[in-house]
Image (tube, rainbow, N blue to C red; front, side, top):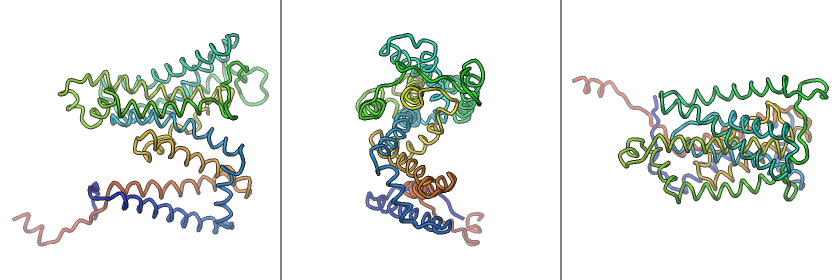
Length: 359
């Protein structure tokens, strides 16, 4: 029998060593899998890198995939710092996308600058309000925020499905239900071939770092995460801080919804979140809730996703094979994080000690 205890004596060098071992373990495991399915592992690895860095277009695609991950991870990190397990980022992205799309579809006569501003503000507010619902029930009735936020993802998605196949369906679309494409004035402008969401992401990373580490509210969030009772004894309005911080968390996720519909898809679909809300949980945890490290984790994850997509075409393999490779790499990386923070201790229970304890 084993028990898990938290590490207190791990040096930085040992921490780095664990992660290096995990990377080599992932390479060995995926190499074996690749050889089993009949391919050369080196060729596959080179192609994965080529899929993200082989051309300007592919690199841009990797950046485009990283943008929603970064902003969503920043939002989730605010909630996680207070031990509020926001698993509802997916739904908050969807509702932000819905709000932005309403103005894009039904108020497209507005000037470009004003329309984009209204879309942005509505997405941020709607995402924030959507996250406030479970936060209020948690503060008022002590409900489980993990289950509550998770279930609200399905409500948001089914609501969009209703719109897509019902009142918002484009009558000119052939086949399955689709929502009409946005007009040009509802589309985010581009800088270096990428929508301006990448600039917003960089600014948000800097602001989040300052907010958490240099402001009073950031300090209060960290104190509440350590102990709500300590925060109350210090005179903090815990309920107000929690609600406002969760609103911020959802607002950032709602912002991602606007970026996706206006900057990437140029229309709305019930699949707009595309798993970003769940993936961001992994990147947030891997980054240790640190805003600067979130950028690195999200970019590496985007490279992994983009590379996985590329090898499907390069080697004519099914998407499930690429997903298996991604999953195996993540398994080893996440496993290393567990052993960085915890260790297994074998329980030694002998007949002698049991008799001694009974006596």
